[in-house]
Image 1 (cartoon, rainbow, N blue to C red):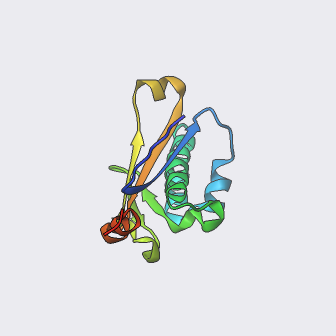
Image 2 (cartoon, one colour):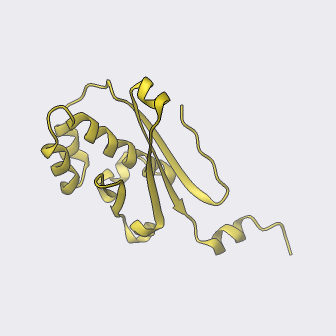
Length: 137
């Protein structure tokens, strides 16, 4: 289980089991942006599922953070993995890519559990955050 909470930021998290069996190319072609599908396609056979799961976790995390589901469009948020994880495209009406910070979680407990995990944070505008938490005059 992975949980994150903040009064200031919108945070989404996702964890996936690396032992999961799926047709990652068919799923990437259906749900990912073309650049990400190409990234999965060009990965070696041994690393293809890992690349897919890394992208899937990031995409699920960003959608959870903004309160949307897969139907919103996993392809509307585009990530790169190398040299580091970065959101390179996001809808302008959701702040564009500069409004987000994405990271993958690692460590011995995740490695032992054979899990892939990601956290994506979106900053709310400071004025909106202050107004929504106002205690009065």
